[in-house]
Image 1 (tube, rainbow, N blue to C red):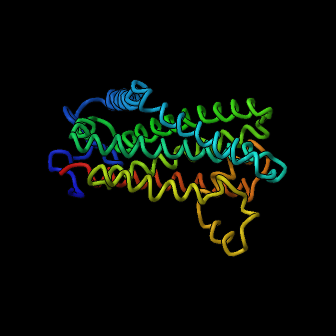
Image 2 (cartoon, helix red, strand yellow):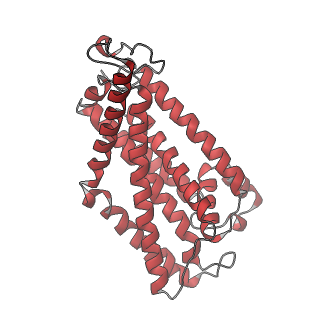
Length: 293
């Protein structure tokens, strides 16, 4: 893959510092250009959302089955033999972590697959030659992928509540604003990482490597199934280098008002990281990295 765009798509729109490409008359009024850009953004966003909504068996069924198994094995079978953690039943404790796992995995996979599939079948060139700015393109991919992650996270939460109800337990949302804030931030963050993954991948195996050997291990060692308090000082210090620890504990704090790390600092750092990664996405689109042969 070449890191640059072809000559025909390298021209930037006049007056667009972010480098959006334009096809057609460059002398159109500024208002018309802005309206066209907004329409294009909404169209691309809608297309990306409908892409996964129209295939619910591929989008929602696999995480539903996977999390039913997680809750059945870890929450019920194993959890019935584990003492409470920080005063919570085991299934209550792992619920926020499983929500984060499903959310970030689906946000990442949606963005990476959508961009790579567009590159693979060359229909992403239709987007690149549209009157959309690079910011609009990136935001359409990121927002649609984050929405998928949030929808899957909501489904996992419903499954967890159903298992809690079946076992005679219940869970509330102690701090709903923290739940919303962390969920939005982590879904946007991993959707943004997914854009980078989709641009970097050279074949479908690359996408599998990113998900199975990078994303999921970080999550499983990020405090989903255990508290950092059970670790030795050395392993606790090493775990604090894992960004997943802050995501999982942030959502857990929203549900249970319990966290192994300071939630406010975690939210601030994750929010700043999300902005940085989105800016990197825009810069890569501006360069045309991986977009065309």
